[in-house]
Image 1 (cartoon, rainbow, N blue to C red):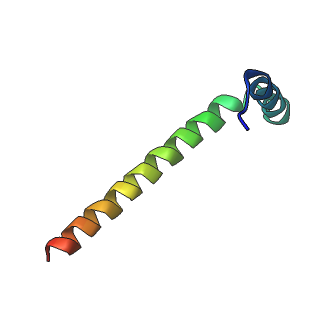
Image 2 (image 1 turned 90 degrees about the vertical axis):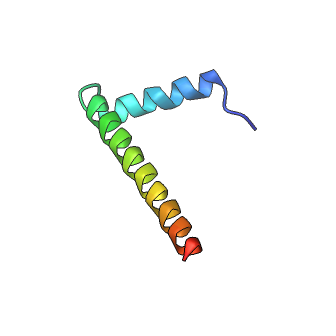
Image 3 (image 1 turned 90 degrees about the horizontal axis):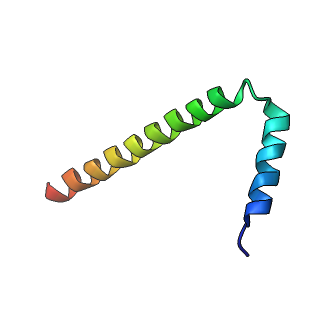
Length: 55
């Protein structure tokens, strides 16, 4: 089952109603920072695995 544009618009509308227009940029910014930190952590873990294989 795939999510269509109608469902995405409904979900975005509900999020807008729940959080309000003023808080959405802050929410998106914090989500972006969280994803950046997650990717950094995953990258660090891969580097640790590579170092342990060499030893």
